[in-house]
Each structure stands twice: as C-alpha cells, then as structure tokens.
Length: 76
Image 1 (cartoon, rainbow, N blue to C red):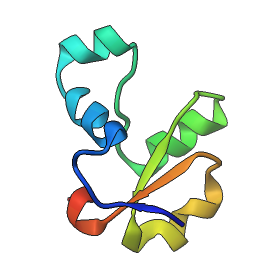
Image 2 (cartoon, helix red, strand yellow):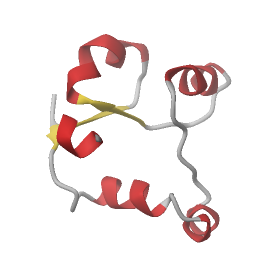
Image 3 (cartoon, rainbow, N blue to C red):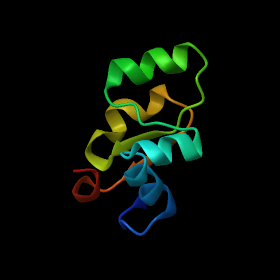
C-alpha cells in the first residue's frame, strides 16, 4: 500500500481545486463525501476514485476497486 503524504501530489491538488465551482466545470468532476454516498455511486456504476485515510484503509479499502490512501494528517 502506497500512502500519499504530500499536498504537492497531483491528485491531492486536483481534489483541493474541486472545492471551487469553476474547476468542477472545467474538469467535469466533483467530490463525493461520505461512505453511503460513495457506496451508492459505485453500486450505480459511477466512475470514482476513493480516497481513504491511512487509519481507515483496512476498514473500507476491500470494498472498492480504485482506492488511494493518504496519510491521516493530509486527509484532515
């Protein structure tokens, strides 16, 4: 398991940008938060990248195909 620890990571930078409407329109992507919302999206064949904290990895990672792990500090 590789863990992202830097806020300079391209994926992390993109997620941060997606907080702003202009980037959601520009990229055609948005952020989902919450276990149930993500689980329902995967069930309905929405293409998602699941970002999970290092401390929750063992609890939830087995449920999703495309999981990225970040350090707890960065996740917060």
